Image 1 (spheres, helix red, strand yellow):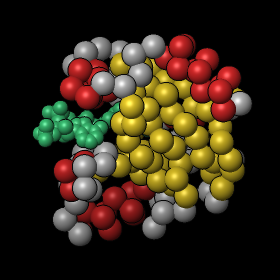
Image 2: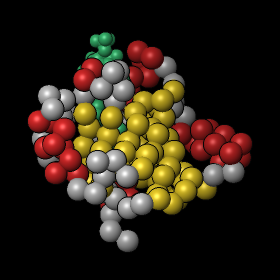
Image 3: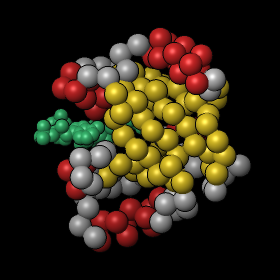
Image 4: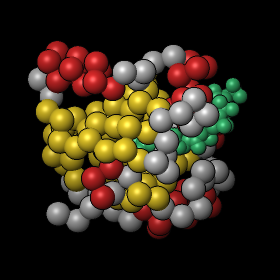
Length: 140
Ligand code: CMX
Ligand code: CO
């Protein structure tokens, strides 16, 4: 089902400060910066490696508002790992397969993710406390 870890999403208060930290400390390169209004985030993707069906990244996330998913997370838990995203071949197919096993989908249909990807989230309470994202990378 999972081809690779696509990214680790990290909630932060100051995107520019965290981009500087991650790129300088770990010698990572920012390959995309986007504002995703639907997800309520301003984000940056830092490339780590290339894998089957797409790359793997660190995703830095700053909330656009306090009542967005990342805004609420920061208020409750502070900065840190927010979600883990797995690369899948076909997100719609994978959502259906996982939902059949009783895991709640937070999205009924795939949404737009970073760099032209299609994404969907699984409820953290059904995945041992880990907010889980499925990613079908854009065709290269
Ligand atoms: N990881 C693990 N648990 C989480 C969590 C996270 N990121 N976010 C919330 N939770 C837990 C909370 O701690 C809370 O648990 P308790 O009841 O035990 O305290 C419970 O889930 C409910 O949390 P809440 O603060 O009341 O928030 P909501 O239920 O309103 O929303 C969630 C939680 C996961 C449904 C919502 O954040 C969501 O839909 N997320 C998916 C979309 C998203 O996160 N987008 C931003 C990233 C975009 C991208 O990657 O591109
Ligand atoms: Co993500």
